[in-house]
Image (tube, rainbow, N blue to C red):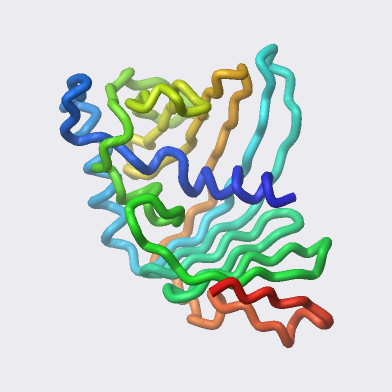
Length: 220
């Protein structure tokens, strides 16, 4: 269950660190324009709500599992809901709730460069972990999509390639594919995005009163 949650948050995470200047190779300036446009557009939103899906395939292309969930964002706050688990963050604390165990782990929010937050999928494009290039446009579901390919500069990573699909019209990330060295492939898709809607601060705080008998494990 916890592994699925981490994978779900990878929609939320794996493609957020893009290299700007790297001595190991040369980045594509056209790809940078696409990523910059996503970041600029996202920063204009006061809030965001979207539906995401995760599909895992093995090396032969056979589907191993599917999950779907909802992500909410407001400033530094976020909430990720997926089958069996919910993650709440109010900008200070993070609650990870396991429904099957009726247990929630409470940790301090870490906004350092290596931390995981949904917001970084859209804005943190300038870390030195990847090289990127633009593969060009393709049509997906009637939409014009720009595909950006990323390769990790650290070759010890368990994956060797990440594809980020950006909607050419909305300047939003449409989907992300992560290719593992084992042959497994993880496809994350985002849809039904609603921006600048009113989201109360209580949405991002775990309230134990709403979960009778829940065990709170404070790791702060």
